[in-house]
Length: 577
Image (cartoon, rainbow, N blue to C red; front, side, top):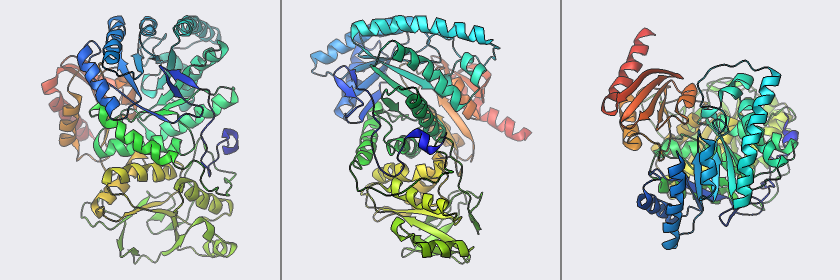
């Protein structure tokens, strides 16, 4: 797919056109604001505890709240939760989260304002990683079975006036989809489209769609692919955005802002959830700041730019550049910072003194904004092998202007490396993390940048340096530390997730380049192990199973012993290498 086929304007902010969806009186899509939401981690059978947590989420600005419904009794108890909330003057819409049992979705539709179903396990059985050789006729029969069951659910939602979310998680694709399409973005999109085509055929438009994965770059490009396929097939349902299992603290915020921000910058996304392995109410301020920051670009001064004809928006590749010392070509992106450290994992490649790079490599650094790129500058860049561009933007839509710079260079055949420099004026590290990640991460996902330089007076060089390396880690263009693929927890969680994550990080934080999944239950746990080296997954109350990638290697370990077993597994594998 080419950029033109997506109908996405890379240089001017416009919200994607969608139908309007009504979730318990809160309107999503069309001309409505981007909505922010969260999910409780209480037991849905704990009526008072769930109500209290919902109210804390709403107090922070949450507009929609989701609760897990493992079975019919939890789905039914949504009614009791909703009644108690209304008595306490809280009318926030509630969403039922359904996995594995289509009948539970039918019950939930009687009580919830919206029902989330997962195509990976709604009619198909839970993922077992078995390959099944379907003939075309057999596969068609499976689709007929799916349609029959899903249509009966849609008919119920029509009668009840309820909305649905078709929510695909990369970690829970069905064996049927995996057998036909493999573990690919196309498979993720097709899993979603099977359900959306039925909604369209049944004239059911009260639908929100989501595709989530813990791999931020994959999440961005897969949602782009979905948007393109939906447009080709005349479907315009609103989109819910999120990076699943983003983790906690700085890493969780940066990872979420990179993925969600990259899509919001292109007008894609109508409701968001920042999934943090923390108290659910902590997610809301992060989501609100991210949404407000990007929504402020509406109606900005237009940027007259054109996409390079060879740029592939759906499957971006890194731009071809010259090698200038440690910058450009196939080398990892460089970091420019004022922070000096002996730790080579997080040591900047270039130090800054009084706003100037101190360097004796012979590179010729040239600072450019979009309007500086004249024919004379183009010729100079083409004739010099040692030039490195410092690309800057002060535009309210920095993503668009920074893109415009690089696309202009690409169109002119200039292969000079580009370091992205952005100056902020934030009073808090939290705001800087969110905004810098949203602005700059997409440049690395799209392969347009060879380095990163963040400035913010009043924020320490050490903190800024950590943000820069965090953005590169989140885009998986430069790995400097251990990555934790950690779910936010919900009513299905089988152990103290937040405390356990902290202990695992303390025990394994020195293992640079390792990816460790910390999952509360089996919904996405085993599936996301495909993207992790090791997995720590809740198996039952107080019991944990350990995975090496997708393979379970030890089952039902007592929780108090599980971290020690994980460390022994990692050490055993490292000894064999």
